[in-house]
Length: 170
Image (cartoon, rainbow, N blue to C red):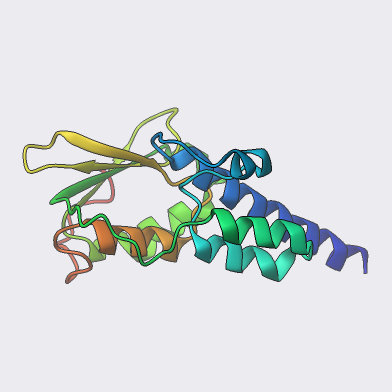
């Protein structure tokens, strides 16, 4: 039973990390004081609250999460022709889902470039047609499918056919 309890604690910690990461991704703007007191920002998506319900049984925390979250259906409509995922492949141990995304799904995004940079945490740079970075998003702790869904929504081409093989890192 000790192993099962440890696994549950690990899952709860992962959910908390996802909520915190979502909070860190936000690029400014006012947030309700009650939401801030709970540690939530406007970057909190309601799908994260639904996932949290599976592991955290505190109804007050669940309700506050749902009060503070933004619907996943809201889309600002901004699309980008290019994105760069900067990673440190020496840190894959700490970010296995990012590594999994790179190995299993990155080839589906023609506008995505993977760059290995020593010392960086996994970060997506959304770029305009001139290669200028318009948005920067930390993807630490994101699941493989979350990264893929985000790129599908943000890249002009979304998920496309596999790219020509050009090597893992450029």
